[in-house]
Length: 242
Image 1 (cartoon, rainbow, N blue to C red):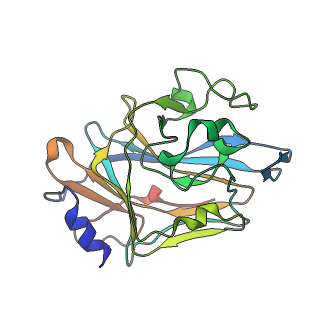
Image 2 (cartoon, rainbow, N blue to C red; image 1 turned 90 degrees about the vertical axis):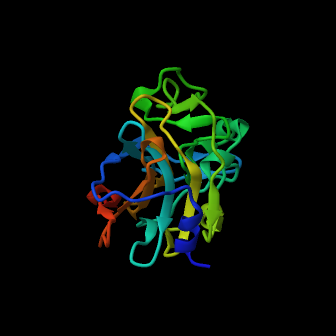
């Protein structure tokens, strides 16, 4: 089975030649440390930064899928290795709150469509209205978490074991997807949806492709990092090299 067949099963009706669903893709430096962080389970090298990648959607739009297909790979790379917490998870929605507060679970590397724990959505720290559940320095006032209804994404043809390994430097797929059929809106009026969290002491690069649902069930739009075809839309910020 190919990924294109899976897309046919998603709740899509038509595609518009005039795309307008994505307003921005941006990276937040969620956490950084100048010293080694070490405890009984985990060790994070000095100079590590936790990055969060967000899709800023137009009003009424929903993020439906993050994918890689032939000609449009989905990848995340670092020049060193990504940090993987022993109490973390492969997907944001699978992280228990107890794991967030235990050891360095809140700094784990994972994929998501909106969720940053099983009961929280991820939001930029500058927009965080309700303080923090963490004592760790620089996250003790705003933690980028807001309580919300978390959707369980479907995962197709993705080897997520990458996010449990402690020597990983590259995640890539040419035929894989993480999706929520009904789509996910951002938890605030700005409609910003979290896509990934990455922790590393290296320089990062990525290419991401997104499918977004148009308002009122009127179809979808596909945004790609490079080489658009047919009615795909090139959005240059979906490709990044530090």
